[in-house]
Amino acid sequence: IIYRDRAGRIWVGTHDGGLRRFDPRSRQFIYYPAREKGRDLFEPEIDAILEDHSGHLWVGSQTGLRILKGKEVMEAGGDMTRLIKTRAIHALFEDSGENLWVGTTSGLFVFTSAGRPALTLPESSGLNIA
Figure 1 (tube, rainbow, N blue to C red):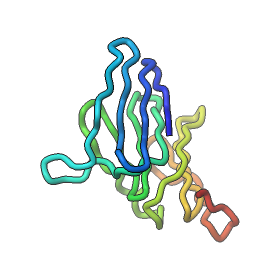
Figure 2: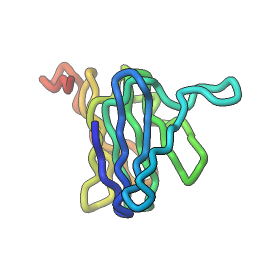
Figure 3: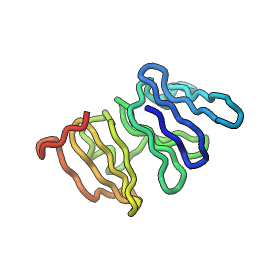
């Protein structure tokens, strides 16, 4: 997947090499490793990337949802982890109300900017986003 952020940087999520950022001004790539200091940062297979209204980068993969805030990588937690039955994230979108839409193989989930569930459409409702 390829995503351009508001600063014009190009983010590349690969299917075997994790996350990379290309800065067109310096013409250099920065690699974000899958593991650092013994902890998982990103899955090597990235399926979705989104920059939210706060400038945070959301990264969806086969193993879940991570948030890049500056140089810190965090796993999405709370209601997001509890409600999303599968860890495979295939689509991310932020609407004009700053709600985060998360498409997975187990359905579509919408969360408020505070991370609270706003809408859940499980796979049984006919939605399987793969």
